[in-house]
Image (cartoon, rainbow, N blue to C red; front, top):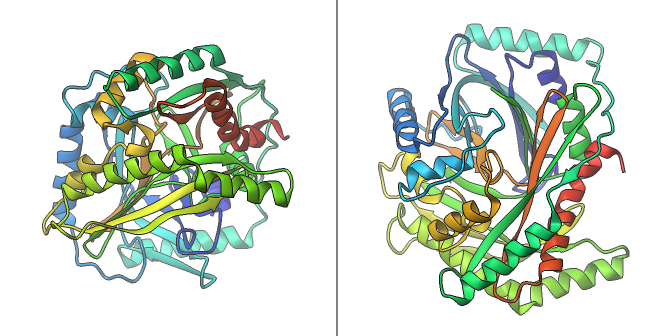
Length: 429
């Protein structure tokens, strides 16, 4: 799919790829075709209400019956920047991002190449026969042609945001917690770099898929740059009237040996701080779903399991609920965005503290991207382990959840462990 995108990036600009492969989370990958002549819905300001209302209007005008054959049979690619939260919650005053990305974007997409990794099948869908024939010809020609060339990734030196500043932020959050303002806050730091020449996003995506495979990875060609993601976390999925969120909270680095690796995993799952933080965030996610689901239907169907990735172990749970009939995609996004695991608890006060301490707009970091179908099916990730490539420049952020007994040095180390998979795709180590 990345090779198809590389051949026609303007026509096929959005790749949603499960680079971890297999299992129910890594079953599907898809490359979406932007509808010719269709201008995207976007907003360059924090007016979330206006953007989501326009999205709902567009969806209602074209909504269709759910066929339940494939995940995507026409609809929209969605990108939601973190600052969209300022429109959802009017009390928030968030610093603006300075990377040139829109705050939010919805691009109509009328065709898709989809791969079912579980059954080793590929599907091509389009909204009309003419487009289907054209897409099939494009795919056939691409398969027959020599592989599209991608450049080598130019090694790039990354500059992290000052670690001492981050540790001071940890101490300030602990003071807020002791004062009773919040229970937990996710604090992040920036990493930036500039190469000697323009970077090839497809080449970086491929290396990222090898270095840090993940179930909610992707590549999106946006105004302002190309967004690359190797996210392990789902924000929300909607299918057959059921919504689910999949919070991640609790992290340890992978061990150097199998014995050490197992010990770190076991220690993570049994650590009182990590368990308490995770349960608190499950409650927050249950509350978010409770705003849009039928009372009594919200439940935790997977509690505190370990998911292991190339560089870290995580504690993960799954929360599901049956939606109140006639809730729109905008209603669902308002209820769950941004994810509680990457803000903290309580969510709005945490976002105020994040703005105070980080002092820069997060932009794509801890936002979301994914798809919305004409049938209302939706799947959005949380944009962590994600980076923006713009010419020769690159930027990303990594964070950690801060609680009352957090140690600044340990939390700083967690941000570095999370950055390792991204940096290896850039510096080749």
